[in-house]
Every structure is written in structure tokens, then in C-alpha cells.
Image 1 (cartoon, each protein chain N blue to C red):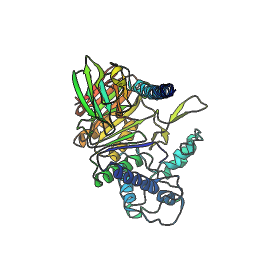
Image 2: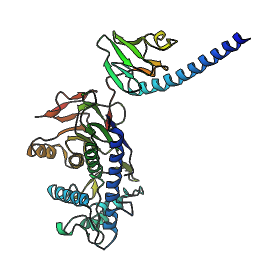
Image 3: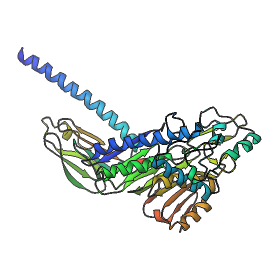
Image 4: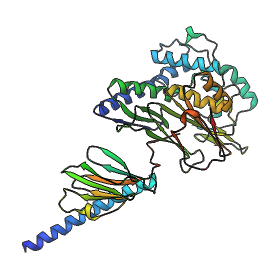
Length: 122
Length: 302
């Protein structure tokens, strides 16, 4: 009985998490679509800061999130999260992508075309 | 200012600075709005009494009067009676007759003398529409500095004003609006300056006669500017200067701007986009400017 309840809880939680992730990812995707499709910069948002790294340079970056350090790898113009302090490692399992999210550590990784402008004069 | 505004400041003093800068912009608007019945300019325009002028207003009025005379009133701060007749102040657009314009034009000048800034003859009116945003932006940047902010980006209705560089020390990347709509044609890497664009695409109406009339007027004729220029962009230290120069170069063209640039120590830079899909820019932008589309030809002014 207990076991069954727990299982249901877990399924619901994971579902919630998925929905949240999907909403976030789709809004981020439309954002990144607005700014361009050809990724040339990795943008890493943390609770404190936003970091931008060129996708042209292979490197591993460490950023501080809500619960610890997330390691992000840039290689061959792509980006992935290779280590995270979060319990379920969903972000690590996403592997390469244009929108990577780690909710527990509050890290969001996106890619932007070099045409990502700070502002438009008009 | 019935316009979009966004202010992005970085660092520990960002929140405090933003709040103060926002208040400063609203304060300036209360001085210079031509439509707010409580503003000082409204009172000057709509009453025969002498009005007490604030220091900022005296400065802006003096600056504008000087620019009017410098450009033989092609740049005209006193054109309100004419632009109002065209409907650009209300949105009820009409094409006035040539006679109406020639009757209104004599009101659109300044003969009052600098000691009489606070009263205008009946029927005359001040309109800071061309330079008000740039001036307000300068004041906001000053306030940010006073509050210890060293890095900020202010977008005041498309006027971009930069304080310092980005927090990581790199330049801000500013795109120029495509006058025809669509992809950004030009990107410029910049810090600590104002980027001000004027273009006929911003506001215009199409009349029953089938012609389009834009919101930028030649202050000498009382008619909207007709030009092969799509937009002019000025990169300058101050937003006020950028506002004046972008508007005036849109009216008077490349030759005038180049002369002005040469006679003012090349202390600013510029980009002009033309109808034939060509582009002109000043040499100071070399290495900072990035052309993102095919232009029919490119001219770099040395």
C-alpha cells in the first residue's frame, strides 16, 4: 500500500517536473529562435550571473548554482552539461542540446547566434 | 515621453541607480513635454504669462536655439504650429495647402532674444520632440554615474545610451534597425556612448493623394523630408548631440554631415543607409562595425 502511494507520488512529481521543463524549454527555445538559429555562443544563466562563452573554443566551464557546481562542456561547436550536483541528473542525461536546464541547481544553458544583440537602435 | 523605455544596469548599485535614473527621466519629461498640461513647455506654449524656467530647460532651450541658427532652421525646435497642422501631434493626419503652410511658417522661428527664454509670442510653440529623448538619456546616465553604476544600457524609445562596457569588460553589441523591416543589417560593438537613429520608417502616413509623408520635417519649408536616405545613425558621447545630428543629417544629407564631422574634430561616428541598398559610414567605426547583409556598395568616409 505504502509503496504504491509513494510510486504514484513519484510519478506525479516527475510529471510536474517534466511539464515545467517543457514550458521553460519552449519559452527559451522561442527566445533563442528570436535571436537566431546558428549557435555561436553558449549562454549560461546562474542564479547570480549570466556567462557567455564562444562555441568556437573547446573548454569545460564550472558555474555555481543554487546547490553546487555545474560543469558545462563546449566541444565542436556544441554544448552539454557533464556534471551537476542535482539528484536526478536530468540535465546531464540531456547530453548535447541548444537548451539545457537544471532546475534543482537553477542553471540554464542556451546557445545564441553571434547576432545576439544587446539592443537595437531605431 | 509616451515611449518604450528599458534600463539595464549591472553591479551592486544597479537597483538604486535604476530607480534614480527612472525618476530623473520622468522629471525631465515633466519639464519638456509638449502635451502634458502640467509641463513647463506646455505652459510656455499655451500662456501669455512669464513662466519660471528650470536650469535644465534653460540649457536645452539655449542648445536648441543655437542648433536652429547653425542649420538655418532646417533643424527647427519651433516648428510645432506646422507639424500640428499636419496632424503629427494628434494622429489626425492631413496635407495642408501650400498657402496654409506659408502662413504658419513665419511663426516657426526664434526672434525673442536669449533674455526672453521664458515667454514666446502668441501662436509660437516649442517642441523638443527631436532632442528631448537624447537629453533625458544624458541626464539619466549622469544619475547612474552619481549612484556608483559603472555599466548600464539604456534604451529610451530606440535611443541607445551606454554607460561603460558590459560587466565582463567587453563591448555592447548594438544592432541597427532594418528600415525595411526584417533582419538587422548592421551590428556595431560599442561602449560608453549614445547610438541614435533617425528614419522616415518610424512614423509616417499615406495621404489620399497616394504620397507618403514622414514625421521628420525640413524646418525651412514646413514639409516632410523627401530623401533617398532610409536612416541615419549617430554614435556620439552625448545623446543630445546624437539626437540633433541624426535628425539634421536625415534632413540635410551626407554632404552636410561629412562637413559637420570634419569641422567638429570627427568627434562622433555615423552610419547612413540608403534606398538603393548602399551604406556609408565613418572610418572611426572600422573594426567595430559588422555588415550582416549584402549592400549594393559601401562607402567609408575617411
